[in-house]
Length: 210
Figure 1: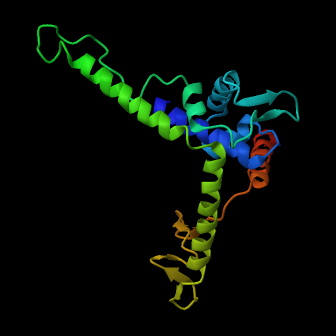
Figure 2: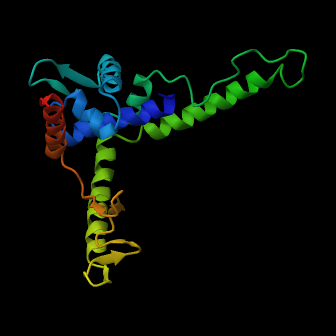
Figure 3: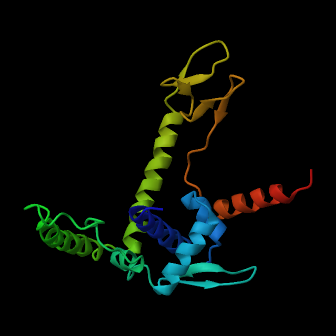
């Protein structure tokens, strides 16, 4: 996982925990939201725990949750927890000392890197995990409203009265399967309880005897 991706995933993880409140989340539940392997999440949780950003407990009722108030945990805390070495890196091998550019380029870029890092940290220090969650809520409402709008704007064509919107089925969420039928997808916002139930159902199917 790239450095930039790790930061995004870490913010995702902490925001999901803030959304769930005091209820601990299993790594499988978090992994489902992030759409990655639970092993990746467990490794990241160890880093975040070492930085004092999350706490974990074992057992059937265990899981991980935020260690601090999300309104007091900044994105800069997350950024530093992942031990960032800077927005960009300098040359892996030393440039030529015989070239007028190569002999000084690292000094110049080093100064630029310090300025960029300072600017990035100043912005991240002003945004908290709670701010991220608050920005997520309007997005969820907008997605739901857009889905409702699509459901009410379909045009009815054909003998069977099936509605179509911009070449799709009535709710704008259909996909054509191999047999030519359209599969329905629900685009509404998924709650944490549904996320947990989905994980449990998949586990049950995986262990069900043939």
